[in-house]
Length: 353
Image 1 (cartoon, rainbow, N blue to C red):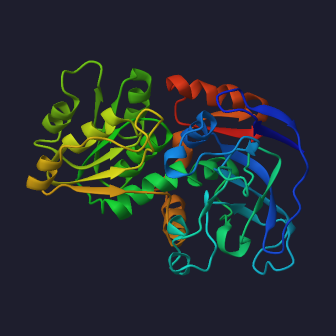
Image 2: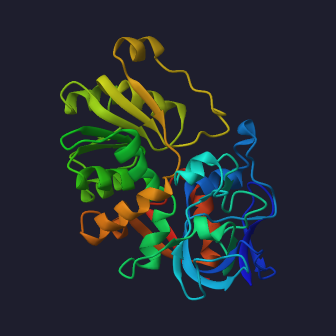
């Protein structure tokens, strides 16, 4: 089968023929119908995350935002059959640890990230295996398409968990979103749909225009103002209730925290680059005196998918609105490389394998 392989960090992915996977007893093989190209793939391609012991090995098949059809079923799998339409969250849990038993595979004690670990080949390929498939595969409602589901495997569902669960978003809240890539635009759309007032912050006018289309009440181009945080505070009438760093660089993280009003909540979604290596200076005294909350947010608990699907069925959320261009597998290497300069808008999705 064909796959896009990370042969050397920083060099273009190589599209080539590889062996078709065989399912272990607990696994299914999913034939890929769609897979998003995410900034986390870019981090992996760059060789990031060595500082947390999570550097992605060379030889890896990337791709962690897939939807597809079950093609083969391991002998121990009980709840899935050939032909089932499924999505696969990027955080593959073991299904047995205390967090998994609560449905929180995103906090699994032995989590394996799909497409970002040597033992979990990803979905930049015609097919890929899923460990503990009974636990990790999410059956798709018939009215949710493969392409729109690709974003739900990582960026869209991550934004939903960050806002609805970690920030406890309420209607009427002012929400500043720093960085309008795929997860940032998803956060804009979700915040608006849930009755909040999103403020989009970025350095590119084309991304800010897309944010307005998705429901942003106001936009801030950080290159055109003297103080980004103060600009957000002025728009929000004293400070944002919730602020998200959807990029993961020092500037956006600090701006996000500094955008908050008293007792506001910052949510860190973006993972850092080789420049920060996970370490960012923050205004701790201000955070203390204003009782600001700082939360991390990683993926989304599996038990939350039903609510997400219900909101999509009701028309409240429309993940298809956040999608970017559709790609062939051959176009994935160039699209990934373009993330060096933040050129992609929305969630690009591979639909031709």
